[in-house]
Length: 205
Image (cartoon, rainbow, N blue to C red; front, top):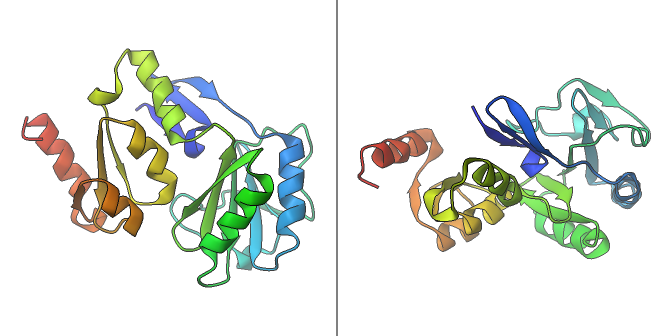
């Protein structure tokens, strides 16, 4: 299986890595210092093998794409020699995810990109890196164009890839913005993605 991982920082095709981006250490330190000024923001930093948590594990909500593998609680970011491929911030103050995202973008948007993911997490990538840049590398590898590509999404961290591909589709359980921008195929609980792919293979869609 080919895949774009960690929000576009790692791209694999035919079993080998064809793209990889890592975070600037200076940007990580600036993010760490900024998050430390808000008691509702809890920083998680990932390398290939570990998730480094800047707060107690109880402050983080585990979800499917943020399962906190091999979690290590630290008082400060990992060393400059650590290749950081993914960063997230868990916001535990109800209703503040958009405000916190806006603040982070205003303060560090020249170095990092911030995308709400659900109602608790803010996904972060190096500036200029997202799921769209990842899928673009796969497209270049196989020689396909955007109008030959379909993508599915449910959260704002999918916005870039949905905007980029020729056939964007969103889930019925997606956030309001995505549902207003692109065709809705149904809920993930109802296997809507599988049905849509079957329609493509059958020549219906």
